[in-house]
Length: 121
Image 1 (cartoon, rainbow, N blue to C red):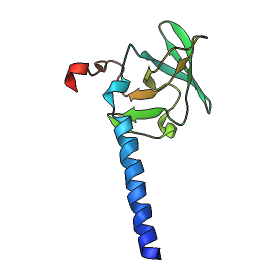
Image 2 (cartoon, one colour; image 1 turned 135 degrees about the vertical axis):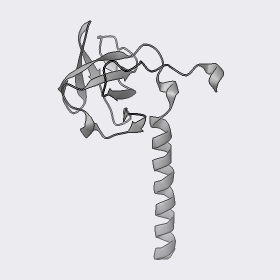
Image 3 (cartoon, rainbow, N blue to C red; image 1 turned 90 degrees about the vertical axis):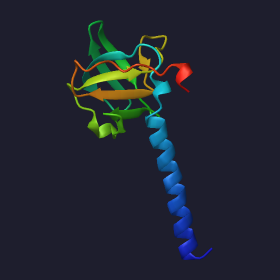
């Protein structure tokens, strides 16, 4: 394979990976169940602390956790202490939440996200 074909193959593969990651970040089916809603009170590489009316909850994050603001994907660097968040994911046995998706909210009074119903597919 010559250098030109190698570059084209790399570009196509990169576009496929990017489009899949963007589709994953906007998959409203991830918005299932009642999210943990609160304020980020601490940030560590793989764990966040979210303070809500119910108290402080640990949130486990992974490379597969998607983070978005205004429907657009953002990097983990967008997370900051004091930010208002919705965290979607299963609650673990110890009480922590395994985050599938984190939605940053600029306005805590913003209308909650509604999960997509199966009839909308």
